[in-house]
Length: 148
Image (cartoon, rainbow, N blue to C red; front, top):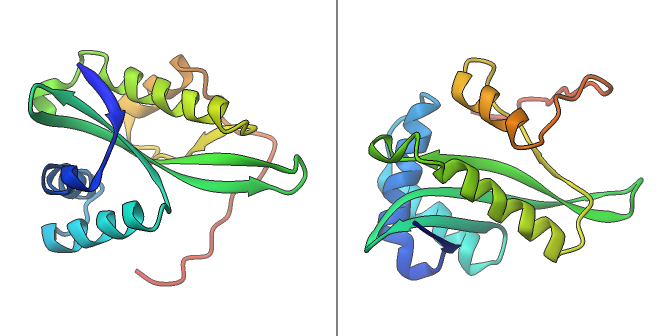
């Protein structure tokens, strides 16, 4: 399994995976919108996307968005998306993608990688603590939903 940064030449396969990721979170399928969204992120350098590649096939990805911590005066990364196609699950690919995220954090001198996942995501809620993520019990997190 090869983990690497995504490029615009990956968009066709990557948008399929991204659409599957969105379906997991009960969003409607829309491959064209997925393709446009990812293309914009890559072309505008608005996110970092790592892909897992098996031969010529992309089988997983993670997407991170840059944020900043005012109190620490440093960059931090939001690991917003992590997805591995069902036939490839249980093979350690998620761990490799998380390791790529941690390496990005180190390379950019960021202070943290943070994430958010649904409480119903049992696999993720077991995986993330095993990879060093700690549940935040010190601070409240309360987003204001603007539109859906």
